Image 1 (cartoon, rainbow over the protein chains, first blue to last red):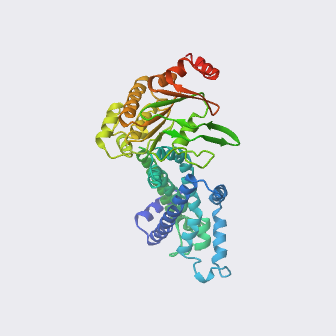
Image 2 (cartoon, rainbow over the protein chains, first blue to last red; image 1 turned 180 degrees about the horizontal axis):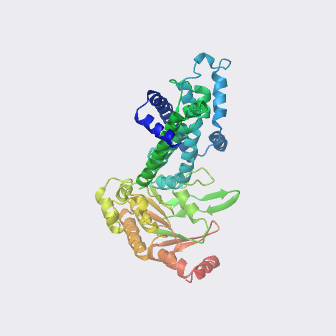
Image 3 (cartoon, chains in turn brown, green; image 1 turned 120 degrees about the horizontal axis):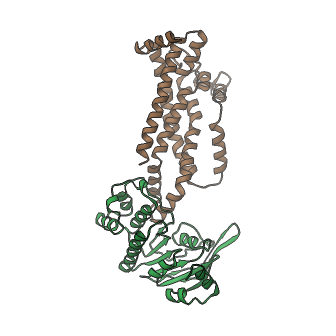
Length: 228
Length: 217
């Protein structure tokens, strides 16, 4: 075990080409999907939290259901849609990074929506009453609400990224864990462990844990700064 | 200034049923009554936060400023909060000094105490000139010194601008100190209305008398 960890650290320090490729694919998939999830999820979350309209409660229940959707179910759904017998087979997206990103967006956007909705539903009524009492326009009211949401947006992004980077079920099904093409950190750990090659798996595990620690440190620091 | 007669129903229960009311300009009208008497609902309807049952406007086309019971401190400094309702820096400085907020100007509004937040909210509202000012228990979270500073400022604002002020208060003493006219509400209805001294010293209605006796008046 000790020698495997030592070899893993040496692998990281030697900038192994395969390791770098896995990191690059992972970064591409996770950064892109979390940014898209943010772009879609933040406005929808604010809308669901700040406004009252018919069907809102149905949408909230639907979003909570999607938040708990098992990644393999999402993977299965996309596999069926884009495989040789699926309706979108002509797009030839199965086993590509693009489809991995789309599946990740579907998986993590409900998390962003849920976080934003919870925060805004709590903040918006009091803020709105104050802003309307001052005679502010709707645009100014939303501007102030966005300003209040900064920390929530930031933490929603980091949580979405953390979920994306730790996810394995959907990306392995739609990406196929193809070496040098669609293999991300989690699928690579599984692949190399199955082969009995622990060194690369441990190296990737160490990187994942370090990233998780970094995300938490950044969240704690930003929480202090943005809550001022 | 006249407000239209209004009713408000929540869950098939009438919580407010008021006749047409006169709010004299350049004067403070206090609204007193127990919890659930409809004071805040009345303030919210006048402030445009809540709607009455009938979809007609309850006020003529005027500028109205409304201070809710719990004002929200925006995520910025105290000074910027105040300047969010106007750009006149000297007016903001004047208001901060009058309310003892001068040394807190650069501080984050989120770090203020309840009383300080209430003073900041009042200063923020008074940055603009309104024809009607609706204040829902503006000093409820303040200590006596801050209360007196705020009352002094509200009184000056009313005299200087000539606006009508509707003051919702639980404090009979505050109504006596500030208001020329008092409205007594009970269960959403106007029970008694009149000159402050008369209503508070020689109430005409038994309900008003009972309410004041409860407060030891």
